[in-house]
Image (cartoon, rainbow, N blue to C red; front, side):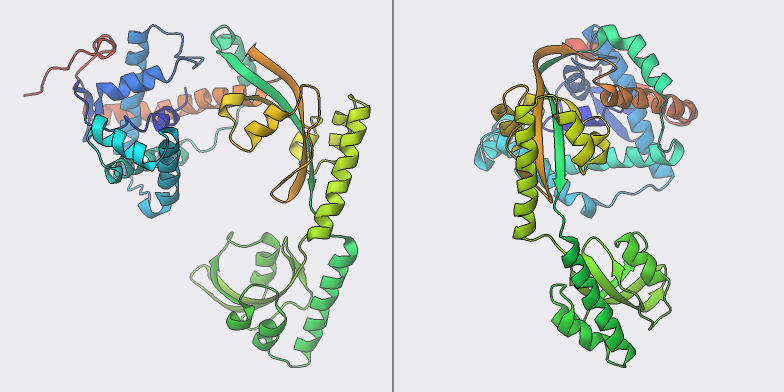
Length: 437
């Protein structure tokens, strides 16, 4: 079974608030409140493993899983696994904004917190930070001891055979396919940029200073002041082609042949290597799509849409032939089923506007024009192996991962002081736990 962290994240308003119904369990220095268990149990109605259990039994199972989650936090302290709070700031703010929006704005949310929970927004930020930090910490412990689990086709089929009768009904679903046409420049423009970079290499060979040429000719922002110096980076931080070429140089050397990255053509000079980091200068001749490229690719998307309007069976063939998203192209463009109430904008509005069996107008999303087709709509449907493989694979992966983690948990449970103060029946009934002396 997968960790309860995602479920608890959805219940962030209740998570770690001082509840009135007592402590369900104490795990080392970690406390589990009964209200947390009930909150998680209420969020698992559609879970294929726990959702069909009687409520008291569900609470009992969730409490056991929460205890294991707390044991992971205890283990993290012993292993000095640390998550930097500074790295979580953007996620905390995104969570806060999402909750503010659900309450109708920042002021309405603040009033709710104050009236119902006795909290200020700053208090809630701290609580959300703790939740996300704990989630990340548990993930790192799992990664350390279990690693990334790969499931076989047989694992997924076995999971489906065991749980198919309890899999939740999927309400208000839409099945979507896509053709993605990435914006690309014409080959002639790429050739011109490369020729410009080659000419700069020749000027370097004749003795001109790299910094001077970078300040004048590099198309990177602020190159006139930085003179092409981008500072120190660690391995893996930069474009792979750029990094490979830079690390093949000795300090002071530059690339004799221009290097192509996703940004354009580079002439690279290695300034220094130290402590696993490297510092470079570069001269960049940009190769980026412009408005003419966008118009050209949109014209191609319009043509493909017209073909699909005249031949409703053409979409899978065209997706395999033209789509730049190779993963979906291999399946004729099929992305799968989505719950309409879970889709975010602008995708929700886009799907609502496309009739079943039709292809919508091209949409510029990121660096690609995308054609979406609504293959089917369903008010209620059951999951199956053919159409929900990825979701079922995730469920199966969670179970296989938990089985591997269980080997370690058996030892850690014996090494951790765990005090259960309530059972599932008492938690479900809302009966306060006895006060510890």
